[in-house]
Image (cartoon, rainbow, N blue to C red; front, side, top):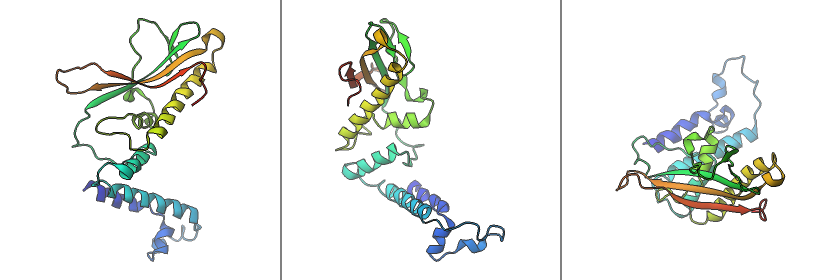
Length: 223
């Protein structure tokens, strides 16, 4: 029932002028102080209609298999943060992903590119959980790049995801290099995803590391 409710809930955001074009002139119910103040705006009407159509189509694909165009469309909805999900009674996550922005400088020192802090050689990996990201947009962006058995990357979307990962690492490389020069420049940088199974047997299995992107000084700045 969540999908039909979600579709109906968005109807209240349809602009009043658009209702008028459909034969239901709600503008007549306004007070006289508001009547005539708002000009018809075709661009706003088009954007609202396109968004409502996108959300109706998205919620209509819930019962379809998560493969092919359906999976690609849902992946697009996740990336644009327009996906609507109700997971209160869903199956709990099977894996816990974290990411690490690891870099080695020309002088041999190691740094965590996300926090811009130095790391000793004996320090454990600076794995970053998604809940530690301050902004929701950062959390959704990282989550959309993680391939898990229950939420695989859509077929045909791998090159796009690879480019997004490379640009993400390059962004953090530029943050560091803009502030440092000479022997403090980055020699090697890696974006690593750590995936740890949850509720496994035996419990607390170690996380596996997957190197998403590796950039050396010779190709830093290239994708």
